[in-house]
Image 1 (spheres, rainbow, N blue to C red):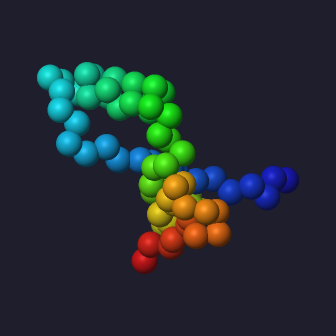
Image 2: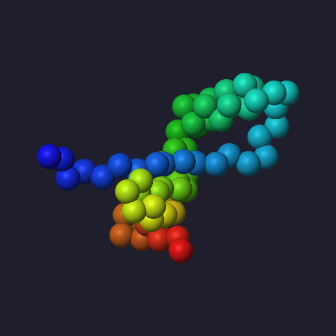
Length: 70
């Protein structure tokens, strides 16, 4: 039996200027793929079993990157 946990991971883009939702999503995708900034973003992570929530800042060193959200 696996001891791995499952998590929901999300990132939020704000102020995306576009003509429609599809264009906004494509702009976000292009930004991630071409600018390679995914490793400097802040991710919202939730443990699916316990519902504990964390903010993970990948621009920080690993030992400082995870903050529990109360």
